[in-house]
Image (cartoon, rainbow, N blue to C red; front, side, top):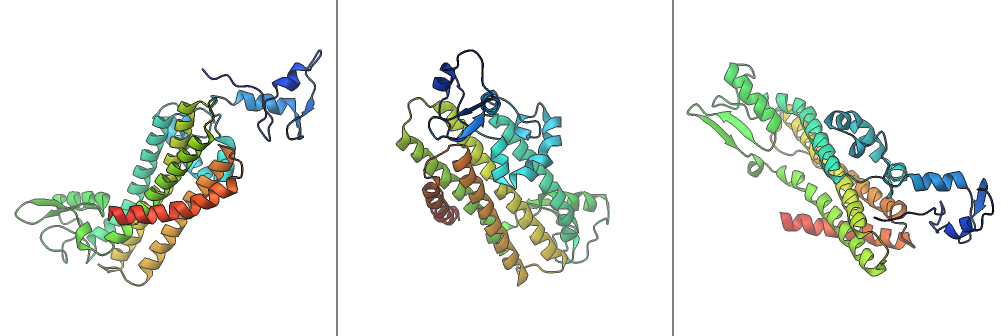
Length: 314
């Protein structure tokens, strides 16, 4: 079990030496002998108390599915601003990767169902994937079977289509038949960005080679940041679904003029959000000296790595 000690709020220097010089009682204020910053001892012990603690708005720290779902909106809203997020969800907080994965599943399912509301009219439109043997004249609620199959297709849109061909119900993927599949596959860039950053930080760990580190905890911290950096990929996938649904709702079965621009903007926002998550994690969680060098290299390297990974996955 790792033992933690009072440290300087700024530089993280061990304050046990200063504490040993106290004669009778704890003073209200002190000064770090390493960096010279003045601080209140209450703040020092507040930092010490954070080890293994939980944050009441964070889904990873929830007890049970109910509280996890209840905290999901607040967690997502704070993750949009990684600097503030990592100030509270720092390296001292409790790590519960299983609960974090559950939260990501909840986010994906919730966004998927929300966008499926757009997939329903898209699926029933003239150029949609309605069933009954004709893509042109079948009504959404022609009969119970038609309603059920179209509803299923709306939820699985655009991954799978369920259609009644007259001779039987057919389930198939539409990805290979439409040009916009390539815009959906751009999400692999985001996965490649996360993998590239994780490799870089892992290499930094090896170079630093601090024998006193709790490497099991450091690995769990890295896994937490990797998972959080995949949240923008989830958001991109669902926003891309929304764009495709709107495209079909307005009567188009192929990519027109405005969709590539919107999807390109979504890709840029996805990668930018990931880079902000990683750069603030480097500065706030790992306190890497000269972090700007790591961050600059990480931003450019992960972007190249993301593109290469996506090209490889294609």
